[in-house]
Length: 155
Image (cartoon, rainbow, N blue to C red; front, side):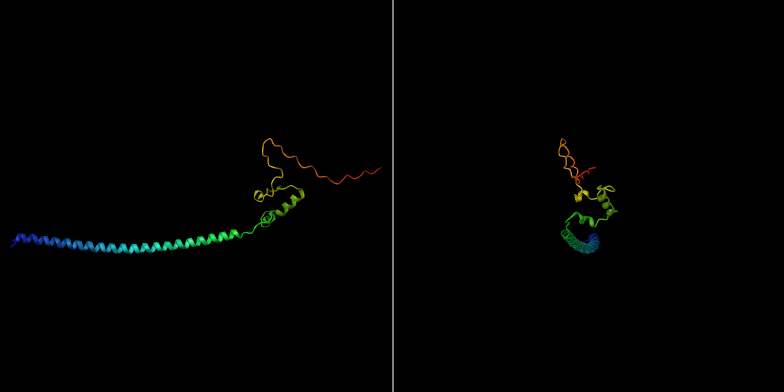
């Protein structure tokens, strides 16, 4: 038979075990709660991931459509057959007046320089480009021959 002191120590050990068991049950409940919250957070993250993937798909489709339209617009641009077609839509101040002035005087670019000289290529120099420093410039063209002189009348 066990003595009273021995029974007392066993009773205390059992009470200690009950406290540890209760603490373990509380910790288990807390872990289950944390796990439940983590699962809900994971579900929310998965839903957000799916939403972002759908957004990326939509943006990719929109970009592809935009690029397709840009390529179509590029390929359907009207071709310009002459420099005059470029001039038709230009918004140049006093254009007609400047044209009349240059036709009448033969002086071009008096009021302003041409705006698209390089792009159009109409205003290139008539003289060839000097390739070497020692090369001479071409002489100016001879003056135009006018009508033959009238015969002098005898006096």
